[in-house]
Image (cartoon, rainbow, N blue to C red; front, side, top):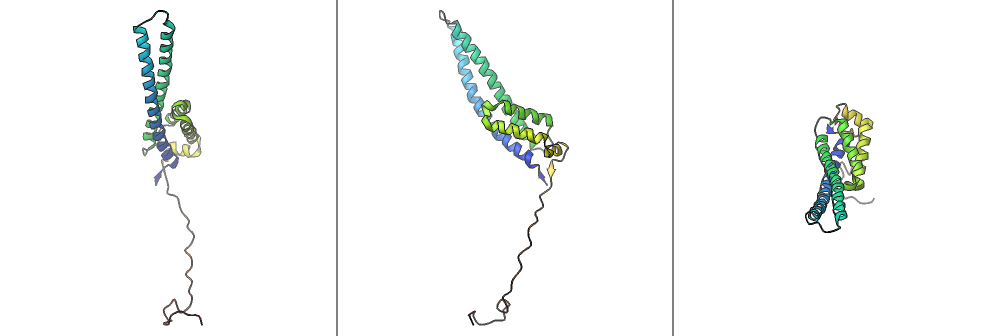
Length: 171
């Protein structure tokens, strides 16, 4: 018995995309931190007529901070689903659908790979294999291989049986 193939693939892809999203989110968070520090500096040292600059920095920091928050939520849900899909008991269908939708929404941090993982997760959630998985059939039987029969042993006469003592030659 092996784990469900689709659940196993989803867990591996969730770990890969979660790591990619976390890395990109941390770089983006560094950018948000720099913009936030620039906003704080512009508030602390106001110059005459630069109120618009302060507002722009604050709005950018808030918007990019929300993007960073969505990226962190997406990477955390991917890691969570990666660990849960590796367990010998089925994960909740709602959690898998939520994680898949978060991957579809977080295309900014995972690119098309996150979108593909989200679509694959949604397909698995609503397919027949997914219904079987969520019903508790986490393990799937080993595939039965029907190999063709072994080739027949062809005999070439007394030479193969050891009755011919002289070396082979054309007669």
